[in-house]
Each structure stands twice: as C-alpha cells, then as structure tokens.
Length: 129
Image (cartoon, rainbow, N blue to C red; front, top):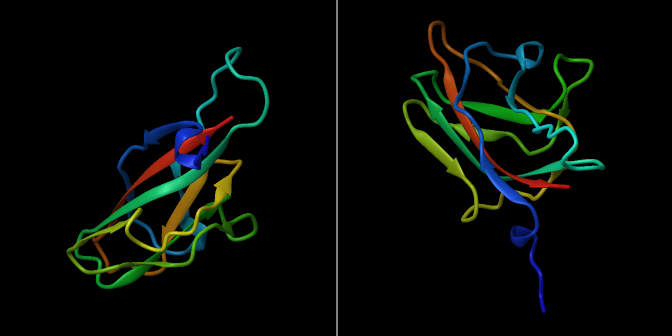
C-alpha cells in the first residue's frame, strides 16, 4: 500500500495574520506549532501545504516565510512569494510550492509596504509527530 505525506498527520488552517510592518526585523509569527502536553511524545513538525496572501493595497511586493524572529535568527523556508497590489494570491497544490518541514513556529514578513497598508496571510499546515 502506498502512503503519501498527505495521509500522515493532521491538516490545520492557521489564523489570519496581518503583516503591517515591512522588513526582516519586523517578522511576525504566522503559525505556532501546537503543544499538547501529555498527549504526544517527541518532536512535532509542520509542513506548509498552502499559503494565501491578501494584499491590502500595499503595492506589489514579496513575502518571505521562514522560522525565527529578527535578522539574526530568521531562516527562510520558501522562495519569496509575490503579493500583487489589491489581490489575493493563493500558493498551494496547483503551484510549485516546495514541501519544507519546520520544527519551530513559522514566521513571515513583507519585503516592502506602502504607508498605511498591510498584507494578510493564512497558512494551511500539515502537523506531523
């Protein structure tokens, strides 16, 4: 029997997180790996399955997704994702989104933003462990 990665683990859609500040120093947690004390033993990981961006008139920019907060600790997980002015940009099963696994909370930041604008981001994650 063939077992695919989609059948191992639990899929969770994260909250809508607003990225209102630009730059790596302002990276924000967009998905926290859940901790179920006493339920699971061992390390849990998160695999990004889908990313949805909504650009609230921030001009065309890119969003970087990784782990860690701030310039010294941030490690990118995915290539830069384009976010187009005033549009919703879905990245997922029908795009070339690489399958990467994170063992820490997932963070993100927009490369640039116009004053008074922001980008909303939602991740769909496969939790393993």
